[in-house]
Image (cartoon, rainbow, N blue to C red):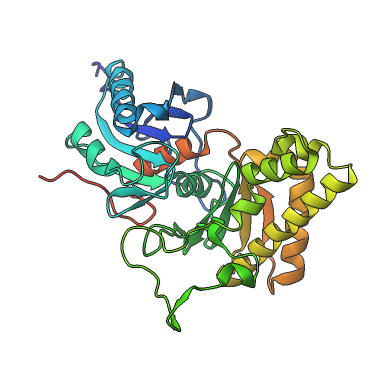
Length: 341
């Protein structure tokens, strides 16, 4: 029997980044469930990525408008039905708005899920923050595949983790699970202001009670660049610091930072009891220095030390995660942003 093949349905992935927005379309049925011994196949070279500048100074509304226009242009060239949209964004998503995202004007408090729901009509939209999306990519296709309890550690300009609990990416009560940037490094970070002898209560509401991200201010790529610049008296990036690690004062700075990171990761492992920690992000260009320190910290401090391995996805992990969200039909919490019928 002959006839015209029916166009395959597809999904759309969107990754909102601080400097770039990435878009890609993937066939909805291209990646089947894995067997017990083999992970699901990744889109790989079949994934054609469209990129545009975020241009955050123009404001959040304009970023969303240009992104939606680019999505419509991309989809217009595709036959078949759009069955789901997965979205990755910086910050966190809480109560249908973006929080902890001060770097793009208007993004803090932006009702991003609702805006995209309106744009895509009856198509389900699934939204997660960038690190949770990257964790979903590693869980579906990467080095967390088959792991029941694990950690994705993102070492980049910022610092965050994704937590896998019972085979799912944990969101947390406020969407902030894994925001290890806020971990205290020592007791002085926990000094609580008192008024009239009464300890101040943590504030209620959408804004975080913690005013500073102590660990991120010490260990992240931005922090290392700032501390290195102050130490050396001239501008330097984190990558350049690692390249100069044989200089005694630079080595001392890096070892101190990696000790703080190792302590945080070891404590996180004690709390979660993962079988594997997967490490990704831009700082993994210095993996030969970072990974041994993390493995040793975990070995010394954790009762049942997990494996510590590099992430599978070096580039576009949040975009692959956005596609994973769309393909799997849920967010890390299993709650989709669906249109009102």
